Image 1 (cartoon, rainbow, N blue to C red):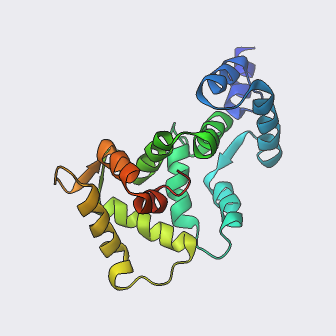
Image 2: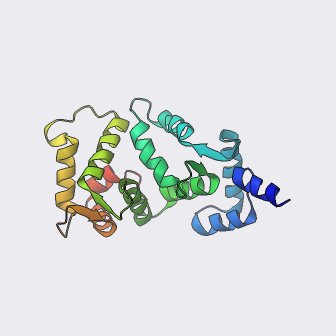
Length: 192
């Protein structure tokens, strides 16, 4: 009997009350909306999990002219909060809530977490350049020369946001800098 419970929990096809309560506290959705989202999620992911391949497939539909793979890998890692290699419904809905309904600081926080590739609490130039390149790929940006090259773009971003001059951005530097500069906010956190 115990293995049956863990099995259904493992496959996440059933939404348990504990998960509903967690989502009610951590999203902007009500119980009925959570149930509707869950039905839709199971329609697309019958096993209750979204793997990276399927995630990229879905994301590519929104950016048909760009190369979504690199950017999606970063987004996927951000949404896969338990590092399982799959996104379960709870992770999915929390991420959807933040990106669609969250306040500006929540969205910038999520963007920072995506940029902090090595998860050390700071974003350095190398990480920022990987993300800017991935954003360029996603958007199909072909002009990558001179001032619009990823390295030049990152140099400008770092010069503007790196307040303490340590060649990396803390979450606070990133969020405060983006809040003060609409251009950077739109580039680095487009949904914010």
